[in-house]
Image (cartoon, rainbow, N blue to C red; front, side, top):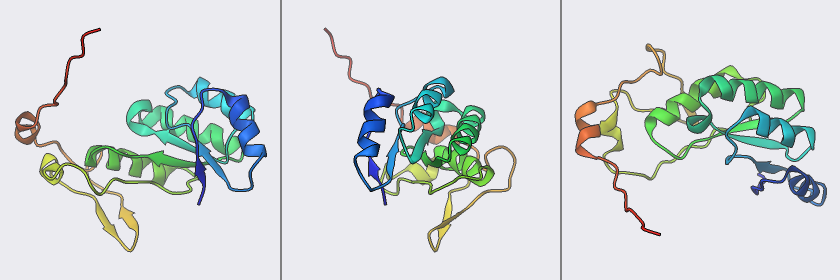
Length: 155
């Protein structure tokens, strides 16, 4: 259990953390190891939520290493597709300071069709795929059948 609170000011977050007894989780909105470094140096959180889809696997691993050096646990932020789940799973399996990995179980009804291999979760544990790359392949036909829907907003 934790309190999840995001702020772009590490000093504000450090103040909030010092004022509560519940562990504080933050940073899913950060997209640079330099940003995370400022928050870790300020003692701003107990758990760093790393958005692997935004930061990429390599940078996410570096962020997790930096977090470990500051006694901060990590929790990959995963509110996207199965591709993101597998990205997060590989990061989670490779770090020493994992707290938990979140996953979204309620999204597009066709999301299982997007990939050749879906995440296997049993007893609250995700099996990390062993195949090449992330352990799955995109189904290009399904991707093409579900293009993103954007609404252009004029100023």
